[in-house]
Length: 469
Image (cartoon, rainbow, N blue to C red; front, top):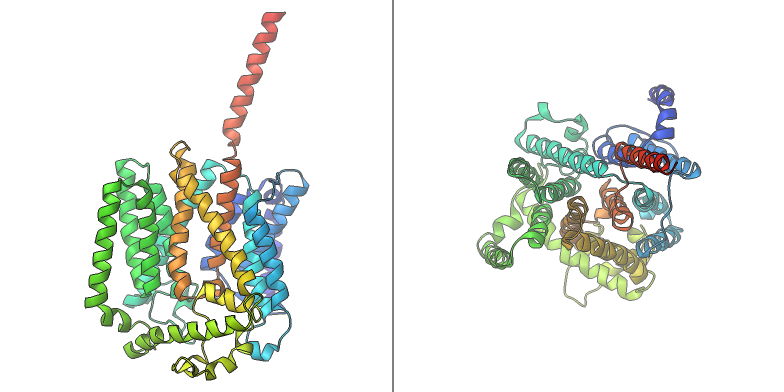
């Protein structure tokens, strides 16, 4: 495998010179989304002091390309804003909170977790933040996300239905990785992560639906149905809520008021009816091949116990937390608390199942506050672009994409620690960087459009000069 990687690297060198000189960061960012999802560490990885995989090599190349283009004067650094400050402080603070502790007790090296799930996504944000985005870059990104979602949906359905000949890559079907086997776990081997990316694709479909003609609306509607089926195949309730939320938030922005009122009332009535009539079926339906319906119901019952343990840990260290990635080293004593009359020892072997509680316990109010400040400010940027009717359609679409992704992220974040699922944070912060770049700087002009404009101005100057002479 090492020899193969070396040969691959040598062959790639031939292509690096023109890419470094003229490569577009927007295209490389889109390629990172696709490669990281389909060809991540489960597909191919080289173990060492730091595990190397295709997506991580591409990430390193993206960062290096951005540094070279900045050195050549091709990138213009924008003034620092609130999101930038929050993320910079957040990254440094979590690095400090990840240090120390017994690696045997933490199970996973906290600093390695920080590197792959905090630092790398934040670096992608800053590259996207300074990258010049053209309108066609945005369209390429949108269509790439939609295509990725269709692929993941098709693969998820084939997983659940047993059509294994159509599942690619084959590591998705590896029985040795038994967790979530039989659900639409996709190449990330996690149905929540798979469902979230399908939700990102649904947000792109909903954004592109707005302002399209009838033919394209019909195409997007058909794609939306495919994504809904794929999302259902994950057999993950939070993914269903997230995908529905991505569509609903766009409808909330662009529907007449009476449609929104009727839609909200219908949603409340439907949710109530489902809660009364289908509660047992929803809580206990069988999902994984290795998980019975009773075990599925048990997994729901454990979440309040995990939240109780998290609350007790938070009360002891409310500001700074117990250390990023050090939950298993610090949580043991809290399972013997009997004040609540709950069997807290049942969740001794489980980790966080909520992003916000995870940050609260590990990094305290400081860490959670920084994360929420960045995400909520990003939501504000997206909402302002989505609802400003005076903006061009493409800028409103990037705003719709933003609020759609966040509407998909929050339901999943309430029931899963999404920060440790591969690619989720890279999608969230990478697209967040695109939003900030477009919000502050607008779209860069296409070279094909800029050159004729310059030539026209030159011809005009020549005409004026001739007239003067």
